[in-house]
Each structure stands twice: as structure tokens, then as C-alpha cells.
Image (cartoon, rainbow, N blue to C red; front, side):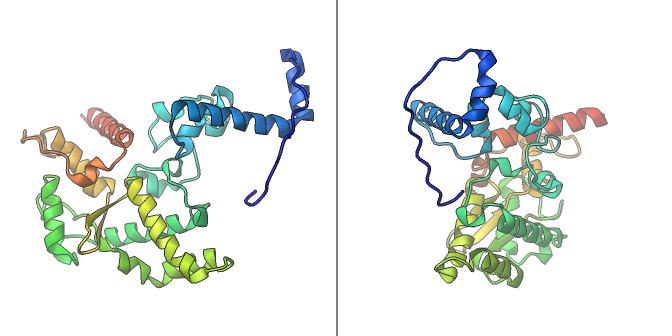
Length: 278
């Protein structure tokens, strides 16, 4: 629990055989737990790295534990199944389909440990994106056209990507109410409410869900599959929707911020879908 301090004193270490392991673990469950934590810490220090999300932790827990957590009977499920079908967490199917993402990949924020605010923010952004049918309905039309040009899409060939400002989300009454409810019991609710917005934006940018498109204009891009990732991947293969060969394009800066594994999984999924339909 948060704020709870534990101290374990080991007075002796005895070697036991496999038949005695279960009984020993039951009787000394807390000591065994913290010894395992110490072992994980040593492995992380030896690797000179910092664990950031659930996927990186699973590999250190061993095959049996990671398999039970994934509930698929296979500890390597994350590597074998894409985010649309694996049962690794409670992320809604809407986020999986729209962003090819799940909360196992999320950068944690202590003020939003259950991702309730992140979920609300993502739903809000996806709702706003769905309302954009054509380039003429965009509030930031010029920037949107430039953005589409960077990943090789014609302005009127598809629904445009969603560009928005940080301030526009902070001023949303529903999001502000959710943020307020999460921090109202803290010592500095007003400061923590602003911090929650800022930290969540920073975390989602780090996770490749958002991209700071124009710092001067405070413009962010929602990096969704249908409107950003898929059009870019199709063009990066040198082919458009009609099957006509077109020149490859370099990766825009907002594509380079996407975790490479997510791009590879999405590219593999699209290739499978195309082969199945042909």
C-alpha cells in the first residue's frame, strides 16, 4: 500500500528441497515476497536500466507468474499476439482499436494510478476526432494540411487527423471535474489538478499517443491508427490504397516517437489483413 513501510530481518538462510518449497512459502509468504523484490532490483541494477511499464516487469517475474498474469497460458503472449487480441489488462477495446495500445505500455502517474483520468481524456480526444469529417471542419486547418502532407496523405482523400491545444482540454468541464475528484483529498488540490493534466499529457506523449506538433502554438496531435499510423505505413511501403506504386516518404517526427514494437505489430496486422482479403 502507498505510504506503508516494511522491514524484513533475515536471521538465517536454510536450503530446502522442492517438496518443501510450497509449505515454506506459505508460512513465510511476506519474507518470500520481499526477497523476490530484492532479486528483481538486483537484476534491474545489473542491466543498468529502469523499468517503465508492465511488459518490462513481466520478463523478470518468470514464465509461470507472467503466464498467469496474461491469462493466456503463454508467458510470451505479448510478443506473439497483437494488442487487439491479447488479454493482458483491462484496457477498453476502443483504445486498442483506435490507438493500437493498451495500458501495459503506459507511463504511470501516481495521481492517476487507475488510469481513470487518462481513459476520460482519451475518450474525449477520440470523440473530438470522430467529429472531424473533412479538412474544412478543422480548427487548425493549415497545420492539419501540413501534418497530412508529412505522412503523404492528400487533404481531401481521408478524414483528417485531430490537432488540438493543451488549453482546450484544460478548459473542458467534464475533464476538469474528473481531475478535481481525483485530487480533492490531497493537500494542494488546485496545484495537483494542474499537475495531473500536465503529467498525463507528458506521459501520453512519451507513450506515443500524443505528439507536440507545434510548441509555439501549443498544438498536439492525436496519433491514432486510422488517421495517422495506417496512412503512413501504407505510404512507407511505397503503395497507396489503390495499389499504385508511389515513392517512399521519410518518417515524420511524430512517427519517430511511436514505440517501434507498436509500429511493427500494426504493420504486421495490416499485412495479415491485406493478405486475408486478397
